[in-house]
Length: 164
Image (tube, rainbow, N blue to C red; front, top):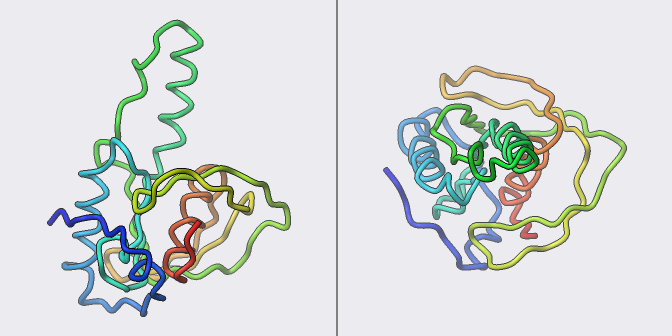
């Protein structure tokens, strides 16, 4: 079910509790539905953004590919042709994500947030390695780089109650 986006800073700063397997059909699915419904303006979400302080994030892993295609299309005079919103494919859900490694190199980037107005500067690692549970409650470990790593770091900040 698509949920309302929370904008109350006090609620957004509450640290998330661990998710349990029973959260998959409720909170986790609601988070995916809400991200997909907002795909025209959002590429990642944490459960506290829909009012539930559980350690669950959803990430659009195809956002970087669409951005690169849009830039290529603009360069070729086809502005907007490839800049389509996500269609639900490439959505990754992580329950109880934890960093196992982070790149030593970082960079500064301006980020926006659906729950906050404007953009702010954030320091991000070039890649992150994360252990998490998937929608089948299976443990996964994966390394992410580029925009996907940036989205994951932003959403994991939300789980810690950190706002950009």
